[in-house]
Structure formats: C-alpha cells, structure tokens
View 1: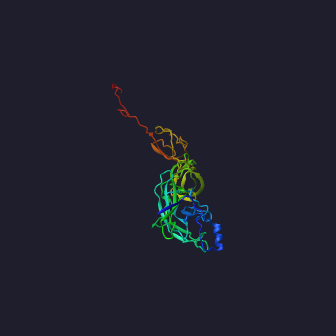
View 2: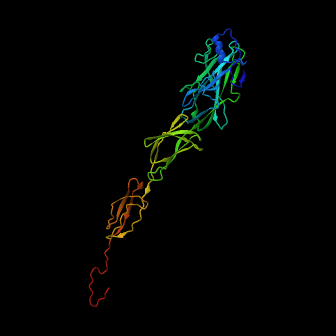
View 3: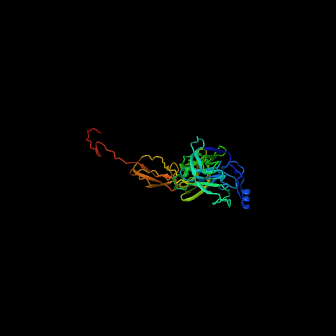
Length: 398
C-alpha cells in the first residue's frame, strides 16, 4: 500500500471530466469549488465532534468557508476547550466527519479514519488510538448537494461516526474529564484509504495531518474541594473565611453559595498560583450549595461548612476563704475578661461553703463557669479542765 501525505489542507482537487453539466451545476461549481489539485483522491474538509457544557457539535480541523462541516466559529486546532471538573462528563470526544473527493472514473475512496491521543501538556505524547469513520453518503451530482446538506461534486463523499452515550461497541465516547487534574492536549489527524489509479482497489492512503503538525486543542481538568475554613475571631464578627482548592491556577470562575439559606453570588474569582480561591468577610452560619462555574460548566461541591463564633471562658479573681458569719464578698457581674452575666445563686451564703454558677449574657460568646466559695466554720475553744474549775485553798492553779 502506498501513502500520499497531504501536507496542507487541500482547497479542492483534480479537473473533473463530465460529459454534461447543467448551467446551474456549472454556476455552483464556479461559486463553491476550485478544482485545482492534481491528486485524484483526498479530503475536502474534516471536523471532530466535541460535547461540552455549551454545545455538542463539530469543531473544524480543515476546509474552506464554503465547505466547513461545523459552525465557522468552531475551530479545533489551537483552541482551548476550557476547564472541566474531574469525572463530570462535561467534555466528551465523540468522533469525526471527513468529506472526501475522488475521480469517479479513475480512482476510489474506500474508507476514512481519525487518529487521536490525549496527553499532559508538559508530558510525553503516547501512541495514537483510531476510530473508523463509516461511509455516510454520496454527493447528489444532479443538485450538487449532499442529502444531509452542503455543496459537493460528483465523486464527493462523507464519512462519519458520532458515538452516542451508552455505546461501547465498537467504540465508546471518550470522556476527557476522566483524567487526573492537569493541563492536556487532544491531538488528531486523519487517513483516507483508496486507490489513486483504480475505481475498485484500496491500496493507497492519503494522510491529513496539518503539514505534519497534526491538529491540537487544549483543555484542563480540575478537582475543586472545600479545603479550609477559619471561624470569626470576635463574637459575631465577620472575619471568617472558606478556601476552595483544586482549581486550575489562573482560571476565572463564578462562585455562588448560600449563607444560612440565603443565596449569595455569583461572584467572580480568579484562582491563585496554587489553584485556590478564598471567600472572606464571613460571619457565623451554615455555608452550603457551593457552585463553581467555569466556561459555562457548573460544579456543585455538595458540601457544607459551619462557621462558629469563638467561645470565651469567663475568668474571675479567686475568692479567699472567710470565716462564717462575717460579711460575704460580692459576686461580680462582669468577668475579668469583660464578659457580663448573672450568678446562681446571686449572693454568697456567709455561713456555709457553696458553689456558684456564672451564666454569660446572650451575645457575649462566653462559656458558663462554676466556682466554689469556702466558708470557714467558727470553732468553740476547749480546755482540759472543761468550762469550770474548782481549786482548794492550797491547790495549784493551772
């Protein structure tokens, strides 16, 4: 089998011989085609089918404006297919279409394939995989149109495969979000099998590979998570924060969430050099329903975070033990660290040891505390001779 490599996207092809062409056909040929290439088989246009969050359609890899397969704005080579969340299924490569030409009386096209590979942008490319593109349709030489639309000439053909979801044989859709986070390249080229000299054989191959550079598009995979949070540092303060990590560094995104059920955003953020954004100025509450939107693709983190006020321990100067019956000290209603509250009991009993619980007022972020106040009971003195003593006139006095 011989191989004819097409180094540039062919504009059109050989001078076709036809016994008769209608005036309309001649006009169409003049308007839409330029048959200048001497090669007897080749490609007219090509495109890959990509599904993302905004569309599912062809992205052109070759062709002129009058014979493009996909929308004119869908250009594959050099495109950035955007940032997508790992395992989200928001970026899928489904196949391709190739328009071919041949001299119907001297040559043959019998098949087409697309070859593709995916590899890290900074990595080493691996081997190519291939997808065979089955025959789709011939050009209607009477109308110079394809049955499915588009101008053409006698001998033109379409070869196409678009793999739907759920298909596994002979090919499955290529879910590009299955890769680990990073920056990737999707690279493709095409081969057309046929014969340059016969109408029946398949001994020659024409390669469409962008002058040897192939066709390449970029995409990025992220895996956002709620990685860190800080509580407010003051009671009912608003200096709390939540950090989302696992983003593509430098990527722009929209973020929305709920704060105690109240919707916030969407707000614009740009991930820093380590792939993080930080939401600041947060008070206590339940933060949930985090939605990260990048190039039209929405990722719900399905995680909530509770931010809490700080808890301050009430502190008081110690109360020294005192004798029963003496004046009891007062219980202060403001702690040494400025927390106000009430005591239970509210007054110290000066006759017996007891415990007293301080309950901070609402909004002070203080914690209750219990103290013990020791009361020393009064003691009656005792002597060996008791409470009375009788001494004889000559007895000794103790």
